[in-house]
Length: 450
Image (cartoon, rainbow, N blue to C red; front, side):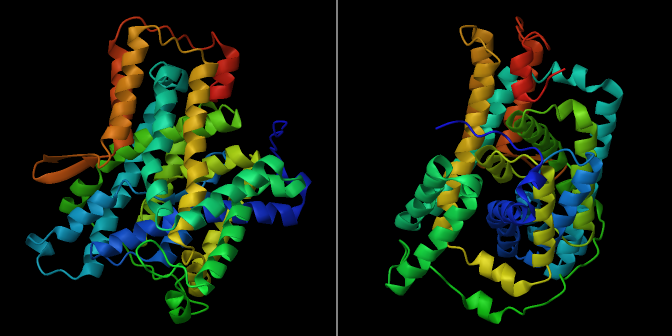
């Protein structure tokens, strides 16, 4: 099989094909994006799915404008703030004593607004110091394992989802592999979409034949679809601000900003473009931060760049940001069509798991590729130690690390812990053998070239 030639301008494919590619990206982000409000609802806070979808699309547009329309990134709802939402939901002292869930949610969102604004401070530091100085602290021995961790930290959810019905998950996985390797023409660049469609049809057949999930539940459940209206405004609500909620949410930004740097490294490496320097981390941080603050200001969750869509970029070979913006339009439209949102939300969990097998694995494979192409010397103990600590932190702290400061619980995600550990070790251990620009081809494939 010949390698696919990357497509940077999808307009050559025609609008119908671009729309299909946009749908593919929408399916890739949908499951995780709506899972955040579902989990927050389980904590007792009424975070809405329509609002989440609407601001995922709007936030993506904000990010693209801030990054000069150059980066093919989709912004979906962030899992990093789940611990913060759970903490606010459990507050029952002071003004929070006896407070109704809707009002609690507005205070939690106020904390997220402030967290998003903290991105602007780090963006200013990057602008003043310059990206090249920053990249001294992010050599391939750090960013490569970080990218591996992004994919591998998501891997347990892929297996967990697939295990609900392995036959269906294998149908999705097998379809994607077949279309990606043996597909012709357009079918070869929409393997994810074909996997979703074929597996959904298989789910209909399995359901009709009386097959069930491993726990005995129905493979397909259309109860939510029947109840949903065709048209409905997302239920916006203004955020409220209180020091307690801000102290819960704002420190999480330290973790998500480190994740952002890892995601930008992954997207840059996937596309082979120097997004870290042009348009620059200061612009991408501003875009991510403003998208998060805008969403939370009107009752939505924090936003973050999505690894699932990075996997689609690698698999399809279509790197045009316009396709991502089409997916953003679909997300906004779905925010106004509750019934369609429920239809897509009815995708069996196993189907999502089968698709995730490929997407999450692709991200980690990109990290391995970057380590190889940058010729990281693992015969040196220094490099082995840095990579080992990053991998163990990124995969070992599956529930993050929670500590208390001034009575407030703060949770660092596994990727944030891994990133901080890697950057710190790289800065203090002697014998740094990485020099920016010494391996132009490796740097280029990592997305950090001159």
